[in-house]
Image (tube, rainbow, N blue to C red; front, side, top):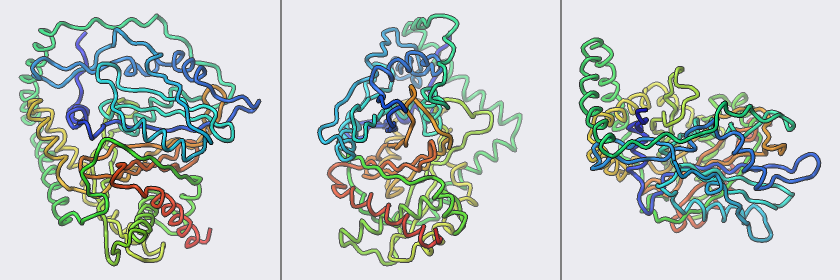
Length: 461
């Protein structure tokens, strides 16, 4: 069996990682007690994973590098796989409240994953306030983006509290035999020869399509450069290895209601809410805000219809400048809508996807160097990612999911990343920040809450 090679984008996330920049994504899922009053336990989570891990084969695969870096790494079954290694019971200090949970999550996000094993871990926080249990799923970005991460996580969930477990696999899992290093080298060299030839053949067969891809890449670069110089921001800092984490939430239907009354999209409402929170943080720091904007990197899914349901990364960056000056919530949303309408008309993300795809034809050493060089550029001030998710009630071993708070990586010189997910009907925000650069993350969290309340008031809700 020929091992599956990482895509150029997936490999980029491996190449970008360094001691201060962990390239994992995570989701903190919080569960209510069951109807009978019992709480979700570590043993329940481990049993559910054991019953369903065959539904997500990537969870039993590790990354194997090619000798002498002659090709991108490959996915191979881990012949030492033990589920117990990946599922860990974790304590939260008294009083077991939200602040202590956030601090515990921040500590876990500060540690990299073990590259010698499958690139994921689950941490189970028991005995939280109100009898709740939380589950933190941490996965390397090389394995998944937000959408496919939801796909993997959904293998754990049921649509009813008393749902039956899935049918067991037809045969007991046995890891594929690892090919010898010489075979990995041979296959990598073969790929290096075939990829350029394949590209040339495709260009010869469809020159119009080839010209479209190249044109899209140039158009994307032109659109990004046309935005002008990235403004200075409060999160422009060389990050360290330690993280802070914070969370806040509101019913997803309230975001829809604001959208219906004031116009735009749910993502516009999210960006306006974050922009209002940023204004509150800058004001608390006594920084100038008048006429000021900050540049947000918005990951955009570029999955084609035939790629839905697949694992791996299919995202591309797009950029939008959001207003952080003093203004009414309604005006802030209107300015965000205007900025995102320009973004939607520019096809920036599609062009950026074409640029990223060119990494498939670069030697791995050059690809890695280019990825690290690009990451050091000041292209944006922070990341805001809105991850779409199903709105139906979800359960794990009979316990109802309350909300799932995402976490996304920081860039080498960008100390804040904000992600939100509408899973199970709650728009849950996860804020991940560098420990030293953003000591006042709680101020930003409260500012986001106040900004959304202002939008609701402006919408007459």
